[in-house]
Amino acid sequence: MPEEDYDLAGFAVGVCDKKEMITGEHLKAGDVLIGMASTGVHSNGFSLVRKVFEKELTKEGLNTYYDSLGKTLGEALLAPTRIYVKALKSVKNAGVTVKACSHITGGGFYENVPRMLKEGTRAVIRKDSYEVPAIFKMLADKGEIEETMMYNTFNMGIGMIVAVDPADVEKTMEAIKATGDVPYVIGSIEEDEKGVTLC
Image (cartoon, rainbow, N blue to C red):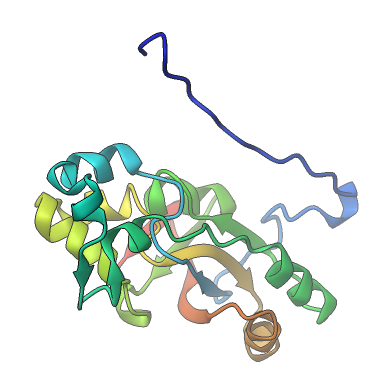
């Protein structure tokens, strides 16, 4: 890194009673996966974003309006990262037990979702269960990035996933909507080798 440049990173530290930790221990086949919409790219995959939009990273390029995005390229790329603490608190306050959860950050679905699973469980996620934001379609097309790589790098429109009992799906959806977040039923848990299947 050049001497005049610097890298700035931020993080947060939380504390939790051990008895309230979400461990995935009670996850089982039939549990439902609910995804919460992201606001876009969030803060991950920007090395690839910069490579794809290298020629557009000028004032003029970033200020160019795209009908497909409904905003300028700069506005789409720099949309603030959605933070899900209010939605998760609302779900908890609604009396729902979140059996497992995954924050979809760097590494996308393939690296993050397995972290929420216990051995012998597999997450099956339907790609057509929600609308993938236009910025990801633009990235894939312009960068000629294959679909697997997109789902292994970006959140693809889902920033947080929770696993709940089927009986709690409606209550969970309402609790998430109450905070202004947008939830989707995106899949379920099956008995299988630990991992994630996108279909």
